[in-house]
Structures are given as structure tokens and as C-alpha cells.
Image 1 (cartoon, one colour):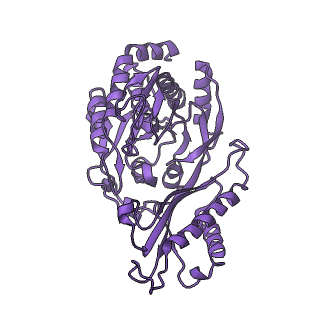
Image 2 (image 1 turned 180 degrees about the vertical axis):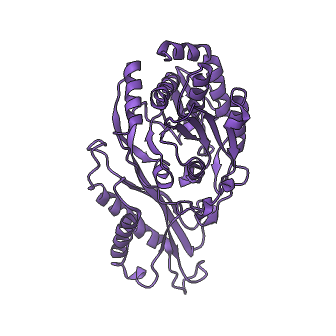
Image 3 (image 1 turned 120 degrees about the vertical axis):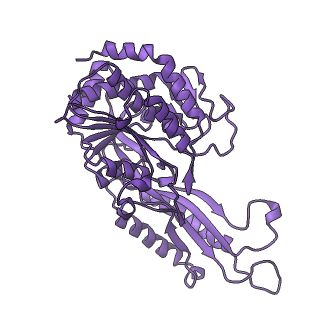
Length: 433
């Protein structure tokens, strides 16, 4: 049986290689840009590095639309804000360490796509894609969310192979596309490709805590449209969408306070409250040079969270019924009610079966490494729900230490990435033997 000191020796010998691998991956722009994305160059980079250690038969890089029946699957969501998504040249990547047979299969499944840097200036290192290290932290868009975690899965696979660990079950490392912006179709494609993986670790940012529950939710859009040409004129009664949007915003604020009264599941802190976050209030432009006329249209974008026990139908009905009641009190909405729609799929929350045998293997890995083992709910939405909805795979969220995903100066703590690799390797050894 492989000992911890063998794994640590491998990691020590590979330290420069691992840090260079991650830094170069961070420097590659793999931003998710709906309806498309830039993931291909990052996937090819990982493939070219890993294929030096794994035979071609155990490496697969494939487009989502190559997966038979994916667009007919009820959980495939083809659009974003009404625009058809494009998956041409945005491949998933899967590597496999094949076992001897008759064993349990494990996957480390992460996503390669990132959110944009939004053109904002970073402070620790000015380049948002620097991949540079300061005080034990590597900075760059995607370090925490989630290139460090995704790469850890491939490195764990390489460690198992280099140490010639004999397993009965197969171990997979996955890098999927289109997780951000409520995508998840890359995850669905991976699940349909390999539906019989018994358990998966999704290495999203958890600070090495074990995420046994996740939130859900979806992005919404409310649109107000007024009749007429807009403009100006003292002799014309101009309906103004901005006033209606203001009343809608106040209704959203009221609903945000209402849902805070819902009790959080036991895996979360009692202080956790689900939220309605209003992202954008738009009508009539954003600069003075765009003003000068009453507009005819406007919209609000917002995110509304849900707990894992909430189903999509009741979640939507309760919100829409509230908005109908609240806005129905104003005469101006009676004959011209705003359009309320989802712009992405509903992301279900997920709750892990903590009695699953793989969870026992994870606990054992923590014990062997002398790490504090903490199970708790993760206060954000992930693609975890798709594993059980589309395949036979149970899943838990377990990733490195870091901060500021989607924000300025996003980083991951280097030591935690190495700890994560150890946890993955030990879990695979115990679970798949």
C-alpha cells in the first residue's frame, strides 16, 4: 500500500512542475463568453501535458454535441437570455487511470471556464492572468474558481500512475466547459459519457472543508415595455418605464427580506440566509450623452437563491405569485404587466449522501493526513446537482483554500492545492482498491 511519505516525496519532487503547470494554465484565457467560450486553448494545454504520461486510449477530448442524445436530455439547457449557445470548438477533456476491474469508479471533476476580469485593475499583480505567487498565494482569474482544483484532479491521477498504485476501479479526471453563467451542459455531457462513475469530487473552493450541501437558484430578467415613440414633448403624456422599474426594484427588495425568514438546513450556519441579488437596473442608457429622451423600455437582472429542498416548480410559483400580488396593487401594471423570465436554467441545490462509502474514504484520508475534518453546506450554487439528475454518480464538493472568485485579486493558497492532491490520491487508493 502506498504510504503518505511516498505521495509527499512525489509532490516534493514535482513541486516546480506543478506550480509551473498551474501558473501557465492561469495565464491562458479560458473565459466563458456566452453564447460561446474560450475554453479550447486551456483544454489543449492540459491534454498536451498529461498525454505525455497517459496513453491516447485513456485520454478523450470531445465537443458537447458529439455526445449522443444530449440535446434531447431534459436537463440540457440550450440558451442564455434567449440566445442559442454555441459549443463548436469548446471541448470537454477526460483522462482515465484504468483499474484491474470489478472495483468502484471515482472521478475528480472540475471546470476550465472562468468569468471575465471585467477590465478591472488588480492590485497585488496588475495582470489578472499573471499566475504569479506572493506570500504563498497564486493570483489570477480562475485560480480559486477553479483551475487549481481542476488541475489537482489530473495531478492526482498522474501521482497514482507514477507511484504504480494498483487499483480495481477506474479513476477519472475531468475538465468540463461552460459551468459558469449557469451553463452545466459540459457537466451533463461528461455524465452522459460516463454515467456509471460511482462517486465524484468536485474541487470548487471550500477551504478544504467537505461541502455536503449546495444552494441552488437562477438568474431572472424583468422587462418593461411602453407604447409610443418616447422622446420629449410638453403636449404628450409619456409613460416612463423608469418609474415602473423603480417599483419593481422595491418589490424585489421586499421579497429579499421575505425569503430571509426561511430556515436554513442543518448543514449550514443558523445565520445563513438565501438572497435575492439585483445585478442590473437599466433604462435609457448609462451616460449623459445617452440621455435627453424618455425611454420606452427597461429591464432588471437579478439572481434568486434556493435551498436544496426547494423544487423548481414551487420556487418559481411562490416568487411569481408574490410579484403579481405586489405589483397588482399599482394601477399602472394592471393593463401592462412586465415580462418576467429566466435567462439561465434553474440550478438545483444538492445534498450529499454522507453515508456513501466514498465519504468514509475521504474521512480516512483526512485522519491519515492529520487534517481537521469538517462537513458543512456550501453557500453557493454549483453543477453538483447534474451528477445525480443525469447519471448514477454521487458527488461532494471539496476544494482548496482561496478567495475572491469572480472578483479582483482572486487567489488560491499553494499549500492547500498540495493538500488537496494528497486527499484525492488517498481517497482513490482506499475507495477504488
